[in-house]
Image 1 (tube, rainbow, N blue to C red):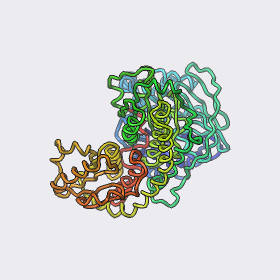
Image 2 (image 1 turned 90 degrees about the vertical axis):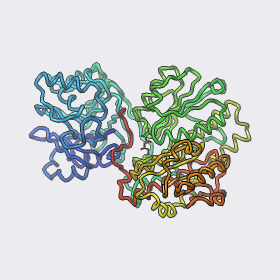
Image 3 (image 1 turned 120 degrees about the vertical axis):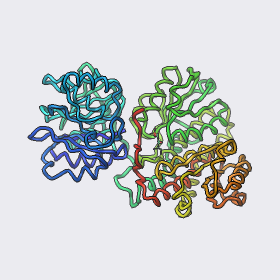
Image 4 (image 1 turned 180 degrees about the horizontal axis):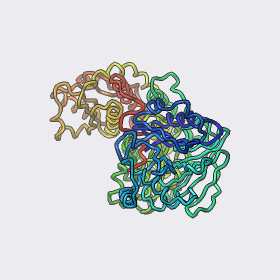
Length: 607
Ligand code: AGP
């Protein structure tokens, strides 16, 4: 995924473009660049690496321009380097553009254009767009962009400058988010609202739509060039603030925000003892008619789904399956009108999850999306939507959004359990009481911070780390392994504790770190046995459990014990905290770029 910004107004464009890119850097940071229209035409400044590298190239002379576009890249086609950085300029200098998405037929178009004498200067798919715009330009840049869009197969969010029309930025969107705003600053273009602070309302471009952004007005057009009336979405106040509030990293701040993220989400949909989702409802008949529930997501959202699957299946008395979105798309499913397909995503823009959701809809399933970013693509593409209220999450490694996803999934569990008659009034009330207490349990686990900082020494310098557990502890182990991998760059493997002895235990040798997640009494003795098995092969075992069970882990080398939990079926949110902190402090110890780990982006809007 990449970050796109654009500005057109009465002020110098560079400060707005650079400031916006700095806030969008979490979307990708292989390279960055801006394009400005000035008296000489279109000036392009690009650089490999982070925005700070680009800033070194921006002298005062660039401050005369008041219209420009900017881009921060997560490479898909072409290595991260200056020539592949956006913006890309057409051969005669007529068009400069920034792109988020993938052009699937770029090679075919490249061959066609080269046969007509076009000389490409990059390895990117994006450059074919600027080349086509120049090819089709007949004096009307919008027509040229529309004709270009007709040739493109794939996804794109585009910000386009035309040298002959310095009073506007052209925009087009298909499959990747693109938002616009007008305020006292002028006309603003961005792929995520965090790019510009103080936004009060935004316009969301839909697939197949175009826009002409000027300093004080926006024209929206459909694919036929007909004007479209669009109303802006008002932005709710958000807890996101520009700074880290004294934290060294956004990730640590967001770990600490988890009690509020969980509680805010859980309580937002409680009206007394009723669960009310403004964007989703099922009657008792519809709930009782359900034949299957799919939970579909990627990465940490998938790990949340995998944890919730156990609880959901246990309580609603239905077959429930958590499936990785990129796998869901290529598997035979038996989806019908009584199949509930739940798609979980922090960004609401993950291409694999969106594609899976579209497949489920085509097969007649009832789709529900659980997302954290309002007005994201998934919000408008599913039958129902439930927002998590984690606030804007900046660190690429998700924490508070993961917790809030669990809150939403637990609410759905209680909602369906009650409507299906599977939860008695007493058990329903008990479930809700436990749910309301999880924010405090997460807070209690945060007290382990210094212990986790100290224990992070176990992992530094290790080549292989194993996270093991059973049932929800296994799903939690998977999240712990992912966190450690993505920010510490240490190879980790999550393994079902009971499965280890069927092969993988051969990899355990003297000093191999094994994190044994064991928060549940119902599988505790089994996991203790698995600890004995790996200890017998020389492993160094760190047990993550509740205080009440700590004495049972005498064989472990170290124990991280969170305060006792009210309901072990709902142990994942608090249990995640020590795992998040262990990964954070290990990455800190290793000097890793914690908020923006190498090779990653906050949301992967390409397949
Ligand atoms: C989690 O820390 C990662 N950043 C990544 O696995 C992420 O969860 C995944 O890409 C899904 O993103 P989404 O929730 O925005 O769909």
